[in-house]
Amino acid sequence: MLQEERFNKILEELAENGAVKNIELSRKLNVSESTIRRDINELDELGELKKVFGGAVGIKKHVNTREEDIVTKAAVHVEEKDIIAKYAAGFICDDDSVFIDAGTTTERMTDYITNRKATYMTNGIVHAQKLAQRGFRVNIVSGAVKKVTLSVIGVNAVKSLSNLNFTKCFMGANGIDLEKGFTTPDMDEAMIKEEVVDRSNDVFILADSSKFGQVSAVTFAKLKGKCIITNKLDNDLYRKYAVVKEAK
Image 1 (cartoon, rainbow, N blue to C red):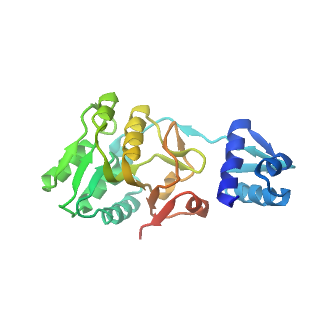
Image 2 (image 1 turned 180 degrees about the horizontal axis):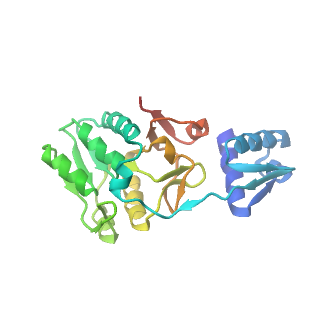
Image 3 (image 1 turned 90 degrees about the vertical axis):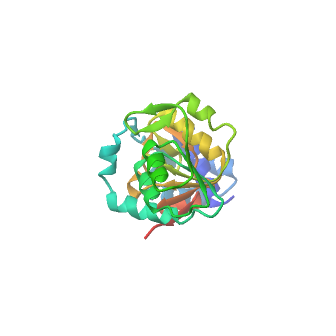
């Protein structure tokens, strides 16, 4: 069993039981206790669990249920978001069908998009306006408008995506965690994000370094198979689960 798979199993056991014993993990994963101890030591150093005698216990992470308004969010990590946005725009190719998620980093991305042979769809009102004003082919999701983020959300918004497929999507996330995956505080926004991710061939998550290790209320996707575009990655363990590109 690969180390990545063992890490997943250990974290799953912790999530379910709150504590694990080396001897039991050794039996369940069919590896030596010394291998389990090394895995637990590494996960402890990464802050994913707390090592105790003979095993490990889980660390309760704060779950963020609050979302700042777009003005507040746009004012933080400005330089990092700009670097990420510019880098992400370069992945759009001719004839792509692209979904751009609502959010402050993805909004900056619309300033750097140059490919006019692609088609675009978004649930961000400002995003759609900026792309349309620049002459791009853009459609907007239909549904209810969330005042705090100026994003289109809700059941009707999800239904409007039911017969669409995308070659690429560029999504935002409030938190990125090895165990919980990509998270957001709002259930309605999570529904949109999950639907888009499921309907996209390539999934890009745009997130500055402050989002790693953070957990919000609702998971909309797991890390596996996704590409994270960030300005800096301090914990290389994320590379075991997702493709990580550091924009410079």
